[in-house]
Image 1: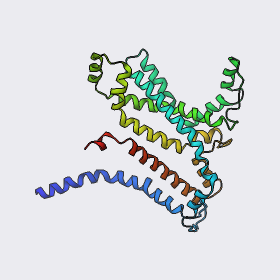
Image 2: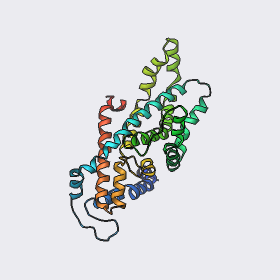
Image 3: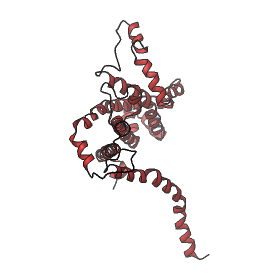
Image 4: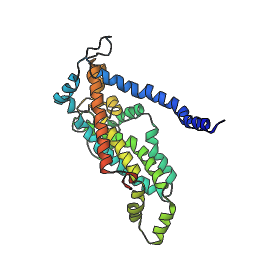
Length: 292
């Protein structure tokens, strides 16, 4: 076979392997996004065959109706909870990266909540927070009174954000632990010979070594905080001031039959997530992007 033909076949081989993944990506990601962009410029109700074109009217409605944007205040509870969750996960990952008695048991216990289905977690914590439930019984045992944890607008978002921390700390813990264990052991041995403390090892070896993972987890945590849905929807349905932007979007589409407006809201959420990601990347660039 001529050399030219062999080079041509070698150049086409990667595209042959990429063809099916790219096709699936286009069918299940990009085409639905393009369709949603079209829906956002219509007043479609989700059922009718007619899709009246309204241009940017849905976007104008989103930015001129304060009640549509006020729900983002609820996301602040989850943003704070997300950073608390990252801090707790990093603490335990650092602690268990060293030799600790029953270390594997603690690793399993920390990761276990992430393996439980979100619906099951929601039902478990419904019984935990209900009046005279598990939490109230524990408080009564130590002489404190119970509370309407999910019925009081002042405490409902704290309770739901706490459930989110309980569920996702294990995932962050495993990713941090894997990153920490990928750091060469020579660095720890050299620092031990120099008399470095655990805190100095964490500050000068571990934290710089896992910086890309910390940045990635921060982006995912912020994006997840803006798009919280599962736990508050199942536990309260968005009642008592716990409605998030995604719950409001779902209600707009399937409860009020405003699929066009809901599609525009989904696009606004996507834009916010991309904006947060861009800001985070600008503030905390990877080492590779800063290396000349």
